[in-house]
Length: 197
Image (cartoon, rainbow, N blue to C red; front, top):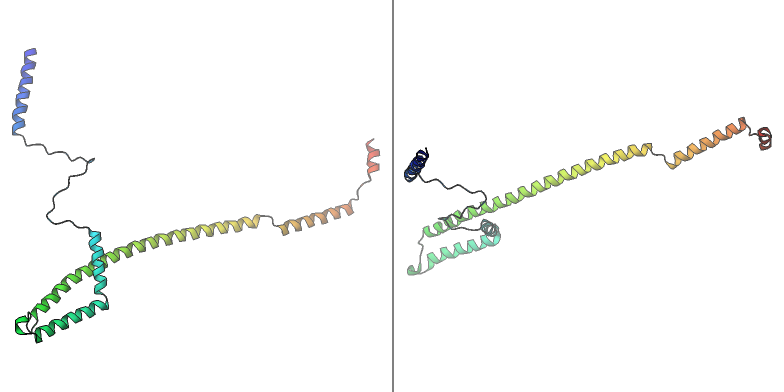
């Protein structure tokens, strides 16, 4: 019996070593309590907030009259240089293809930057509208609460005795007591004392 147990244990260890060599390696478990190691990226990393601020600055500059004046001056100088400069110094001949290419390049960069700035402004507006909506909901709730409180105070004041009401009630009681005095005159104290003795 003991030898059978020993041979079974040897057999199991032999099969486990042979199957362990042929089995696929186990995938390591993902640990949720530890952060993942940083992966290498092919593209360079950048700060989206800084890039967004930069794009907003450019979009603000592109929307000013100063940009239009500078752009107009550059185009005028470009055209005048390429028409009246000596042939050896001209870099863009009459159809001004290079100027068209530069303007297209500037427009192709300006449009996404303007859209990015508009998206950031939309996000800010959405947050502002959400805060305004929550604030208006709070003010409506406060107004409704105060309205209910004022209504309950009015109802409570309707049941509270005011000075004028107490004065009128006391005057009514005094009149009633005077009427009773006239109907039932008070007895003399000496007569009462004699009767008690």
